[in-house]
Image (cartoon, rainbow, N blue to C red; front, side):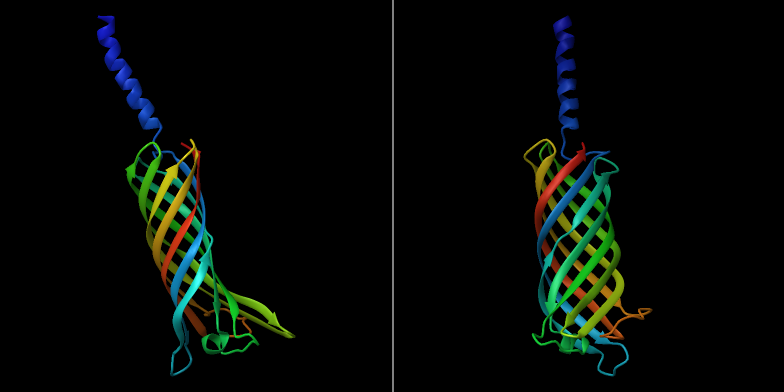
Length: 218
């Protein structure tokens, strides 16, 4: 009789161990560091001009975000993303000023709140989809000889995408991510720009990233 009762107890224990070993569950705390490639339609417009659109072309950039996530349930998580992209644009058509090499570094940064849905989870694999909304800005700041230039615009961003995590250790794994996004930034209420006054910047495109993920708490 004791052996008879021992079998379901062993099966129950194995089920509990398997559940606790899942890559994502309620109470999980995840940290992700990644970098990758982004391609956008980089567009600027002069709000005070009749010919509003000044610059519109495809631009390649580099992306470096960090993401925190907390598991609300066994499928849903909420997180915060801090990201930044770097582009090299021609400032003459884009913002109306000139530098000798016709290239300036435009840095975009974002802070978003993210909702994640984990639709496939095993003890090592975690596949999820996410949607984000938050703040974004574009900054161009530098010098060309004695000429200093500064441009800053702020606004909002929305992003949606999918993530795949695979844990080769108990807490450490690799991450792959793909997303599409749209950001719109304006110079309204910005008073210290030296170039591009009244110029808005919008970006629409996609990003592909790879990196590392770490489970602070399983």
